[in-house]
Length: 124
Image 1 (cartoon, rainbow, N blue to C red):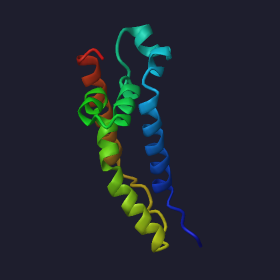
Image 2 (cartoon, rainbow, N blue to C red):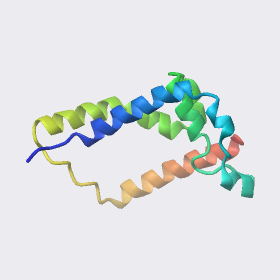
Image 3 (cartoon, rainbow, N blue to C red):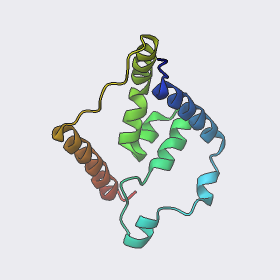
């Protein structure tokens, strides 16, 4: 059975998207903005993500981390994940099962809530 390195392929496409985003710097001005923020006055959990991706397209890591720390951290870890995925596909190993741990799920939710609280506190 052939194993496809999906994580590596998606990462390459995401990298290409970030590279293209560097050329589309004026485009976010044309976007409508966050509907949640417009309705409530508070930032949503994903506020700053577009600006984060645009900064990553310019290789401006500090600005990307400023706009959305969780996305910048995941992108920083992506090369290691790609290498793992290519090794997994080369060895024809299946993907491991996702952890079915309440601790992992709660930790992910706490990180997302923490980023959201940070976005609200900074009034992004």
